[in-house]
Every structure is written in structure tokens, then in C-alpha cells.
Length: 137
Ligand code: GCU
Ligand code: CA
Image 1 (cartoon, protein in one colour):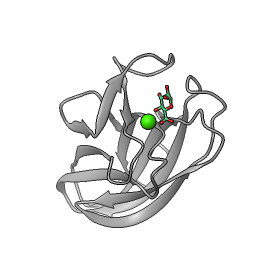
Image 2 (cartoon, helix red, strand yellow):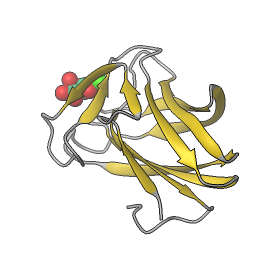
Image 3 (cartoon, helix red, strand yellow):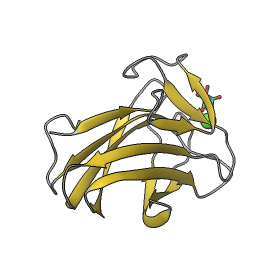
Image 4 (cartoon, helix red, strand yellow):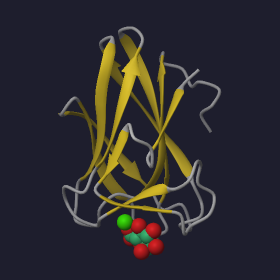
């Protein structure tokens, strides 16, 4: 099973605004990061043990081009991810990536690779193990 970290909750930070104007999000809102380099969303997650963790990133991209982002764990870039257009800002999809973690707390930051910024980010699912926990969509 994975733990869900909502972008609007205290264990996360959003360089932008927490919005709720597009439907279909989980919880009470989503992170609309500023459309700028450096405008990140960051989650603090806890790993009960060391291992391979699967990140499920729920996002919406109502634009017409993919938005690229770097995934940083504890400040170190470990992955790049492409958030393709989802068709509308109310259509949400989940991207999964795997990262290695030690036991304990870690920051997971999504940092846009270009000034088009991030897509809207709803939550991060964090689960130990290389497979896809049942909560992933
Ligand atoms: C629109 C949309 C926002 C989105 C933004 C963007 O303004 O309403 O939710 O974040 O486009 O292009 O990033
Ligand atoms: Ca935005």
C-alpha cells in the first residue's frame, strides 16, 4: 500500500497557489505552481525501511505540450518525468517513477525544466516496493 500526500496538506509546499477551480482532484485542492523555472512542489515522505519506492504523481495538463520536470530526492535530481497533455485541466492522470530511499523522512521535489512550469499537481503516492500499489491508478 502507498501513503498519499496531498499537495494542499502540511507535509507539502507549493510555489504557486492551492486551487480548486478544476474538478476531479482529491482532497480539498491541488497545487497550481507558477509557470516559471524554480516553481516547484515538494512533499515530505516517510519510508519505513530502505528500498525501492514507487512514486505516483497525479497531475493534470490542460495545455497542448508536455511539461518536463526533474524529480529531486533530498535535493538530488534522480529522474526526469514528462507530463503529457491530459486533454483538459479537469482530466487527471498518474505518472509513476521509482527511486531508491533509505529509511526515514525524505523530500521529494518536482521542479520544472522550463518556464512553462509544472502541470497542476494533485498528490503524491509513495509506496515501498517496485510494484504498483493498489491505490495507484
Ligand atoms: C490555466 C489553468 C491553471 C494552470 C495554468 C497553467 O491558467 O487555469 O490551472 O495551472 O493554466 O498553464 O499552468
Ligand atoms: Ca500553473
